Length: 119
Image (cartoon, rainbow, N blue to C red; front, top):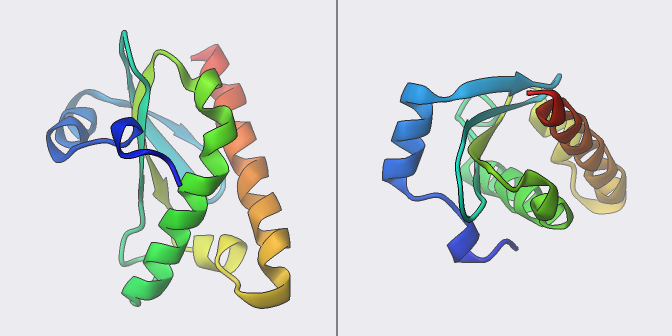
């Protein structure tokens, strides 16, 4: 899990929604602003992803776990990852398929980070 100091607060999220730019992948959107200083990210699971709070929290926890190795590549960016409608089927399975789901999430995060290099 990502430390609290690397996660966004509510005021920063509101600022990102007003001023930020988007980078999209098939199931995740990253809305960000360029900053100097510490990198902070957040994962948002809307009710369109799942009605169940338990499953939305599962998506968020998996997102925080998957982004940890890439935090050094996100320097200069502060933003929020937003899961899409079909993200629960791509990243949210429990049991034996969970490793495969984490690989899918990892691939989408790599895709977004590669797009950020060009932004």
